[in-house]
Amino acid sequence: MKKLYLAAIAGNLGMLSVGQFLGWSSPSLPVLMQGKDEKYSMHLTPEEASWVASLLTFGSAAGTIICAVIVNNFSRKNTMLFTALPSIISWLMIAFATSSKELYISRFISGLATGIAYTATPMYFGEISPPHIRGNLTSMLTVATKIGILLEFVIGSYLSIQNLTFVSLVAPCLFMLVFIWLPESPYYLMRRNAKEETINSLVQLRGKEDVYKEACNIERFVKTNLDDQTVFRELLCVPGNRKALITILCVGITQQMSGSQAMLQYAQMIFDEINADLEGKYLTMILGVVQMIFTIICMFITDHSGRRSLLIISCIGTACSTAMVATYFNLQYNHVNTNNITWLPATGVIVFTIMYSLGLASLPFTLLSELFPTNVKALGSPIVLIAINLIAFVVTTSYLIIADIAGIHVPFWIFTAFSFAGALFTFFYLPETKGKTFEQIQEQLQGLSKQ
Image 1 (cartoon, rainbow, N blue to C red):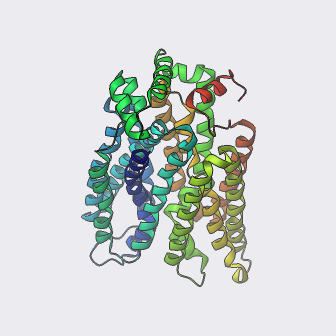
Image 2: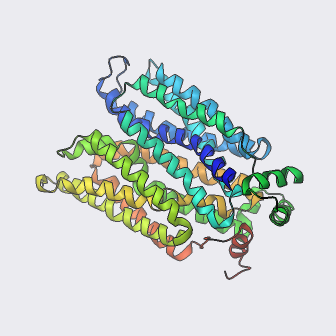
């Protein structure tokens, strides 16, 4: 099992790089908008800054499409390794950018790496993991992402923009050097009818020689799924596939419409609006630490508490916390004196981070690795991730516009409504997948099992 955890840790170095892309804008955009970095002679308008922030998610949608094309032919492992190339190119472009257009291109390229990584990594982790720890391992990718975000929040406040990008280059380079030596997904190898390689992969991942029973189960499962030629019609018309698609889409929409992108990309700006005693950059660092701690907690309790209960708690918690932020800015918008409650929005943002990290941050990707059968994953996963990234693009782009036109409170009330709706959907529709094999999950989705 040592190799299994090594594969998970090494694979997550790529997700750490993704987290750095996500976290880069929070400390960097205020500097670029105010022109404070003398070595980086560029000044962004609010509109340009919103494009720099949002083009990451637009590129991520394109990266998801690329992953859908290559992941079944290029393999899970090689597709993950490929993300190092656009990651390195993007960081170098940011380091030497001289115009907003160059920043746009670099952020779009970093989005390509993000989309590919978010599609291929849950597939790989889900397929190398035994059922009893699959939730833990698939949640690790979100932990790695949050660590990357935290690194950018902390070091981004003390380094120049160029030096920050050079430090950020370490993660994709290290990922490529370490992950190349680790085994391929046994499900992918069996899909290619490479039985001997499948057994060798399982021996490495399980740390034992007696893997033939699991190999036979994988072969039976893969053969059953590959007997059907997957087309878009089957994704929608097969009841189990359709339920998986609807379920993951709705959970993913809730994840994005809860306000996560606005909180992440504009964290320092939101804190600066609060006029609290502590500077926005320090509150952002606290936010990053809290986010990482509770994402790790979620990773350890996912396989004990179950997916449904954690998601319901997470949705209700995020709804209540965004309502706190919305209430403060609503009062401020109506010219009510808020000097005595400056703690309210800061508390709301921190509580949001805690509650979001406990479920919505990682469990959609756990479900993405679990609900689709093997023959549908390469089609269903990209469709879900493209939709999620397009919604994230809209949220990130429109947040500043809506806040400027209607007031900051308006987008936060919208986030509150969607989080409550997500809690209701999870309660009435989401199947529990804790501790179940892929075969049992498909039986449950197809209505062939009451488990």
